[in-house]
Image (cartoon, rainbow, N blue to C red):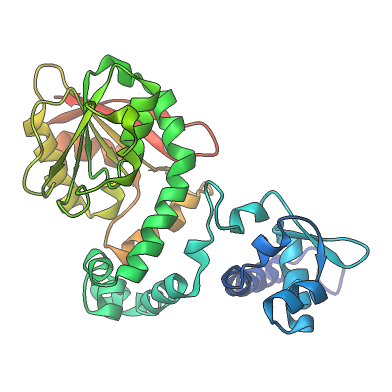
Length: 344
């Protein structure tokens, strides 16, 4: 409001920008309390800041004020006795829950990100990926040479996949395809979900040789004889003979040139009515709010990759001599879509 009592859009903008600054502090406070395992300490029931601080060896007043700041954002709730409760949203700050974000909020991971984001000004001028400038190598090369960080990354993705993979397996007729090739399938979580849901399906787990050497999520006896591991580089070759080629969260890690190389490799492998299924986020066009627009800039900064709109995926498919047949958004809470393609 202005002095005259009329609406002042400039003042509202100033408040909005102040809120953005508060959100930056929000992330740092979340990182701080996540690193100390506060959510896990609250799991059994409400506790005061004094109890939490004593159990974790922390400063009571500082902890209280941080939790009070975080409470309106929905992670914790403070009662009239000044005890803090863990909310349903806050459950995802715990360690061993499906979809946990605890690992992504740990200091080693966050510090890696923030050092990269500091190079966004240089990226804006040169186009060189911010992560590469900050760390002197690509994101994936860095993970390969830092096992501790790679473990955090893998564990974080695995917990997210605990929510996504059963939804994917239930949302697409995998049973129509006797032989499924999971390209870049990591530890086999998605393939395991498909095999569980569709007992008639057999599969190939395709990834780098060291990744598929002993995939933990396919070790159970119930999968014996229904899958095989194939090691290789999906930029160079794709295993032939599949009825369905699945790529989950692969495309968004790469720019169009590299993504197109993978798609063309898959196109060469497609035979006799085989299909390709891209599982990735589909970004909304225009000015509509969309968390995938954050992820687009995040991938740009870290890997040089990108999120894509449906139109951008369609153009990518066409460039690989593929035709995008349909797009099937997964049900909540997943944020991915299934993009089904055939030979053009």
